[in-house]
Image (cartoon, rainbow over all chains, first blue to last red; front, side):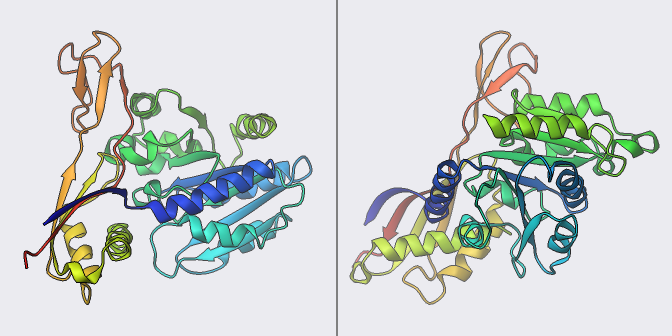
Length: 215
Length: 114
């Protein structure tokens, strides 16, 4: 005997994601889910963002890693609130973890929450966290073929940050190619070329954050 | 390995909807889109592990891959997006719009005939 079901497999995650989305909307918080490979520079981008914007807006960072509190400690050192989620081996964050974590944050007059997902260009893209926007980071050292190889992460993003542009002269990285491939998957993708180390190009990213926060 | 969580969700979903009296599950059909990056072998492995000790133990898992539709902005040709050759099969241009990818769906459960 066969039974037709047609049920979303990740429904439970979607229920938590939808509760998170309502929470962000009700509290007028912009939430960004930041996804990338390990080592692309997400935490450095967020450190620099925290330093640049902490006197202009109320910002909080949720850090996701398999193990350690290292990233949350780096953010806390900038004076911005941060909470670490240790997944203890899981390769992505799920919406329920975010639901539990946002209640530990001081969300009074909070403008932006950035969730730094576990470093992984595959698994996190299937799990909606209830975010307002999704950002994907690609560092130049990873190579300019990554949009083709990991299409899911790029197709579902609103923003692409191409990081480590300061070392591009040492690499065979074709920035035009990656932008072309990314826009093929996602015509409305907003792209920033930055170096979190030197902060080159980051003003545009900061201004964009301030602009979307107001919307 | 996000397949592990997908497998756990499938089993939980089956157990929450189906009474044990219906008997043993022999086949489960699921579907996914092109962007889910779901690997069939990893999915089968994870499903078998999650099914252990439940009415789904030993069931076969079938994974249907739903194509991702695209439309060419140059010649209006509708086609299935190809990850390997992302271009219009008619005019060869790569100026196209892709549709919404299929979600992960539990499609069908088959029970052993009593």
